[in-house]
Image 1 (cartoon, rainbow, N blue to C red):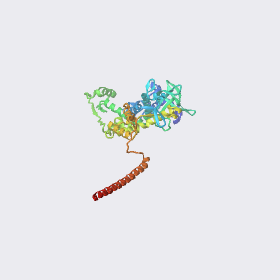
Image 2: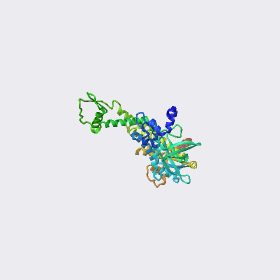
Image 3: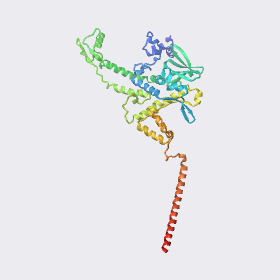
Image 4: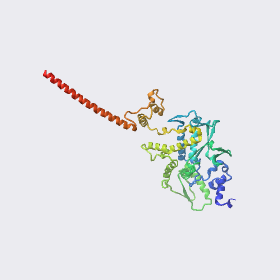
Amino acid sequence: MLQKMGFLGKLGFIVSNPVLTIKYFVKNLSLSDPKAWDRSLWNLWGSQSASGEVVTEDTALTYSAVYNAISLISGTIAALPLHLFQQQGKSKKYALSNPLYNVMHNRWNPYMTAMTGREVMMAHILAYGNGYAEIVRDGLGQVKELWPIPPNRIRMKMEEGKLIYIVTVDNEEIKLPWEKILHVPGLGFDGYQGYSPIAMARRSIGLSMAMETYGSLYFKHGTHPGVAVTHPGTLSDPKKLRDALNQVYSGLGNSHRLMLLEEGMKIERMEFNPEESQFLESRNFQIPEIARWFNLPPHKLKDLTKSSFNNIEQEQISFVTDSILPWLIRLEQTYFIQLLSPAEQKQGYYFKHIVEGLLRGDAKSRAEYYQIMINIGAMTRNEVRDKEDLDPVDDPLADELFIQMNTLPLSQFSKYAERQTAIENNNEENELEEIEDKRITHLITYKERGVNKSN
């Protein structure tokens, strides 16, 4: 049947049949292989990189830089305090009475903490490009539980102008409406689904994995990449001799053993220097390459070649503002439109991650910052103590805002200048009056002295 189809027809038929997809594109599984009938492996289409390594969302985690990047970002975001606030005029308060606060801050479901759930979802987004969770509501429509869904078991579809999600569970497809799925997409061009970073970076990750495989095989064979054994005559069974030599002399455990050669055989080593092929340099380059794909500063993946004590603090700020902050805004806005009801949105409810902990400097820097904030009237002393996780002081003045007396609003400067001018003019008049008083007093004293002399 395939022979009668055109190229596009063959492509559509093969892609629509997962088993044929694996057979034609991955070429690692046959129809008789039980793995070919495992639905969890049907996403392997196109997973083989140019280096020959099979790169999927699962196999990519075996490369340390990818695992470190995903665990770092997902763990950092999940560890940040996430609060549900309600805006009331110019002030805000914690929405502790809302059941959703407990779900997002403490417990996703009876078996999963909020940090674990948020970490799993973020890891899915970083690996697959999309994170999904089923929303369970109570009779009043309040969110009471969230259950993460593996992205390889869910797909989107538009039916009658409405977005639905089809989840595969035990070979059974379950349709869920948009209102019952929390979906956080990563970067994508349609606004509905994100691209898989692993798929986009398949060549870079495949090259890194191939280098690790090559290095492992290099040491597996006793750091001898290849030797040539020559025989003066003709061998009747060269495979038998090759297998015998490999069995006795190949591998780290057989390194430096005495080799016995018969019948005039000679051995010639094929020299190889890893530095000549830039093997080590290429391995070092792959860490910044992975960091670039995940928008991370290289030092976060333990590459400190270009870091120092002088710039590490700025690198940390860059990590928060460039790597973490865009994800936080994406998550907060998604939570707002998918977890909060229209009524709650109008009532001023919103989610906010607290990132100050990531930007904490040393004790001296924090003390200088707090001093400035107190002097300009932006923070009270108890607010400073709260930032440092200290108990408040039972003193009314500790909740008062203080400002320095030598500062004033710019809008009041003209009145201040007029008042100062009036004071100066008044001072001049007072000085003239004092001078006049002194002159009159002097004249009176002089006259009195003259009268006394005449008497």
